[in-house]
Length: 473
Image (tube, rainbow, N blue to C red; front, side):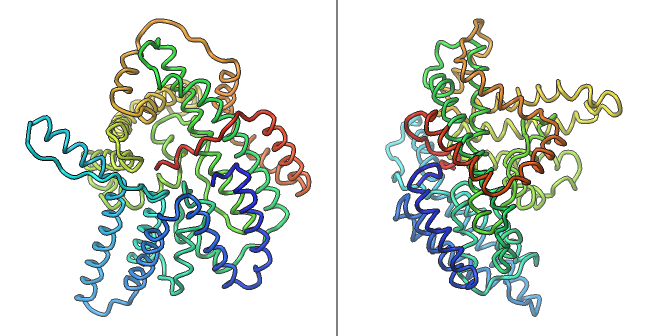
């Protein structure tokens, strides 16, 4: 069930009422939230539940083993081997369900090209929804236990709920154990201020998803990417800017709705976006875009590879590999691999040339606007690869980038794109004051804003409801 639907509204109202009724009995409340999360996940496809449950229970069991005290050198070695084994196991499961079809198809294409008389068997298996996100949380849990950052949980319900908590289950934010378990052990009171924040986040998410993202996709992005053959360069750039606005509003809408619903249940989820299109470099962009994924890649991939401790060449290698694997994480497609390599190359070049483009004092603020524009265009060029369904479409659009000609923009799409990008330029201090002001609203005032928004959305919304972009990952 999608967040902005009547089905989810009924489901969430029931969960919210029961959650509040059982808040004085933590064990019952945790078990109820776990059942609700599994119902939410199974609503998509009940066949996905056994794998999810077994994976979660296995993570709890191996976590308990990794949390055992080390009494000797041999035990330490066995513990290390166990950690490597279990991480490899979950990485293999992610690879198998997400990439085996892609890999076997590519191998068969090579075999056909070489005129060999045999092909590998290919089974079109179901891609478990959210497997990329909950696998990363499993690996976070096991890694933090192994490195002594987190205690193994004795109660399997705690671990199962950490992995299945339905507001963020399908598309994040990616939770760390230290961000979830303390809230599970000591429930945060649902105050009027938290309810107000929740209503406003839900309002923001609904507008961004149902109106902005949907109209940008239907009016600009989908038509262009479905027929790129006769486009001018201006039309391609317009579509890329529109897609940048679409994917930002779509994904940040999911985050807003996840944060809002979690707040009403008494949980704080981490922020996932921070005005990414106001970044003056690619490095800054990746600190502001999908923040929890960037954190995960930094702490569990980039730093274990060596981070920036091994000199220029090793640091460049680590950056490139991190972004390459980050691109592959998004999906089993050559376009995602190329997109990840493109991001990695840009970050390496930016690191090499960073001293040349460091402008202290007076020149720094003065030159920030052109640097922001350049970064936005570089990111937008990468979106071409990210959005293209195949290499042929991406190649066709790349070829059209320099084609002369103008473009005709739908007035609504032009307004929406302008609002998204110009909104990133609102000063951070003003954002903070607006946030403080909004929190001073009463719960009833925020609820009125939500009700009026629902009424406005019901009038303006287009027919149908597309899934969130990141559901496919």
